[in-house]
Length: 283
Image 1 (cartoon, helix red, strand yellow):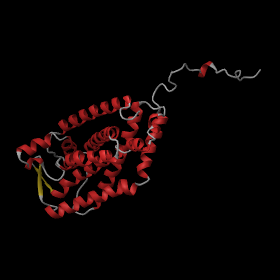
Image 2 (cartoon, one colour; image 1 turned 180 degrees about the vertical axis):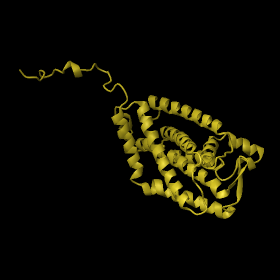
Image 3 (tube, one colour; image 1 turned 135 degrees about the vertical axis):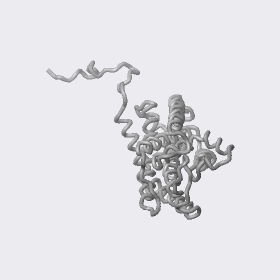
Image 4 (tube, one colour; image 1 turned 90 degrees about the vertical axis):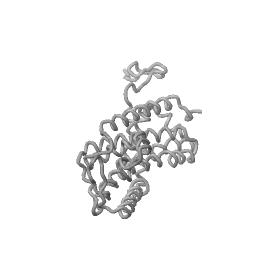
């Protein structure tokens, strides 16, 4: 007798009721595929997406150290630190934050503009899997840029970027990259054209990054500006990241960690809800 079922019949072992999900748990294959696609997208133009930001950030280091003196001391948490050593960690994480946002704010926006957003919404991926792949790729780009900037600064004379607390460097680098990745996903969901994303970058991300204590210690500011710095979430990322290199910070590391972690959870939930509803993604 033939072991094949009669024509038109499906063995009960593989029969599924209408609407019953075939993939019951995490779709690891689909998650990995989308993540690899997003990583390959920016890595194909790595000269522009990885190495160019490293060169630009190194130019900031050169300009500010020449203008202020590489060995001019800066007080951080009551401890004097050479200006070049003070500014280097902030520049590294600033490059990471900007590129995490740029990567996360690109994919869905381009899909909406080009009309192929269905390529992200139609595959058998849950909302959490889609979000994880987009954020994971953005975090990967952030760490690629951060590693390139760190390598360039490590080879630059007169700058010391050997981590004292490597776990703090990785932790705050991860928190900061996720923070800007979620912000980038939100921007790509809201924006209808590249001008909208550029407006968020120019009028929100860039000012908050530059006014977060990257180039100065907030202890030297007037009380009003110091208070503004302490409500700027970028300040806690940069302060905690700098602590990993210098062993001192402008704010308590534990407080900064809790603040950024809470913001990440809130942004992650908001991204999930908007993606789940298909707001401005599904017509």
